[in-house]
Length: 224
Image (cartoon, rainbow, N blue to C red; front, top):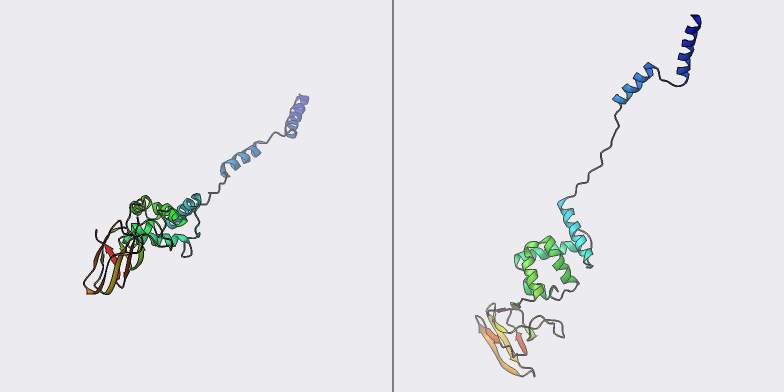
């Protein structure tokens, strides 16, 4: 009887030595697993302003098209210039003819390509006038005096300005000491006049004319 008790006690000592947890240790581990949840750190969120998003779209579009421009959304960057162009288009200060010729949209030089690329981003409401300029469906409606060769209005003369389209033009304001002349391909005068004083002057330039000269007449406006 005494031997059996000794054996049982020895078995209990052996189980403890082999690593079996006591009841008290098991309870501690269980409680620890319940009261120590896995901690997670939320990823930081980045808020992009509408201005930053617009510049990012503008920058990416011009880079993708291989267009040269000055980066930056402030006054030193080309985007500020393009936003001004949008304002001029909306106000009518920049017309389709000037957009096509002076700004290069018809010729699709770097400046013209940039404008054609940025308008859908910065002022999509002005897309129709850009389409008109690209197609060359434009006419010069006003011009100042000087010497002009007659042509289709979309080609540059050897000295840098553009050919003047045929049509009927009228001075925008009353004139005094205004001289004008139409000439042929040999430089001969077809018609001319010196106007001492008049409320306005109207001249029709024919498609067969080669040159038109005006001095002291102010701004001419296309009337038909």
